[in-house]
Length: 86
Image 1 (tube, rainbow, N blue to C red):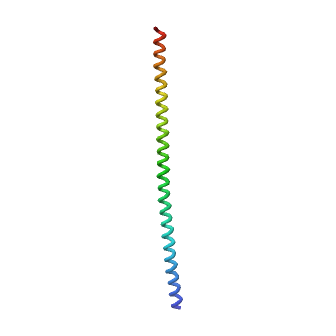
Image 2 (cartoon, rainbow, N blue to C red; image 1 turned 135 degrees about the horizontal axis):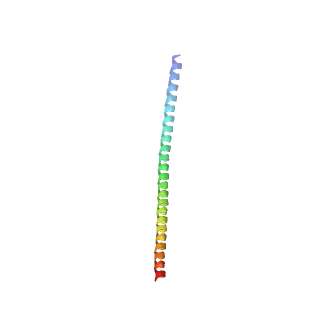
Image 3 (cartoon, rainbow, N blue to C red; image 1 turned 30 degrees about the vertical axis):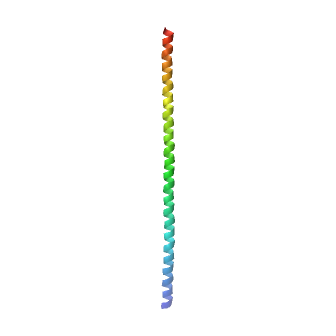
């Protein structure tokens, strides 16, 4: 009976050691996945920020073009009115 108990305890120790190694391997894999997800998120944020800046720059450039167009129309109108009054 003692031999049977000793074998049973030893098999439980071996199973516990195997379970621990499995858990450590799974933890390492999960940590690596988390690290990769963080890198992916950082890359997506950089792309998003660059895209946003590009859209803001485009909007500012469009606004500047529209202001320049209006200014040109005002100047043209003023010179046109001056020429017609002379």
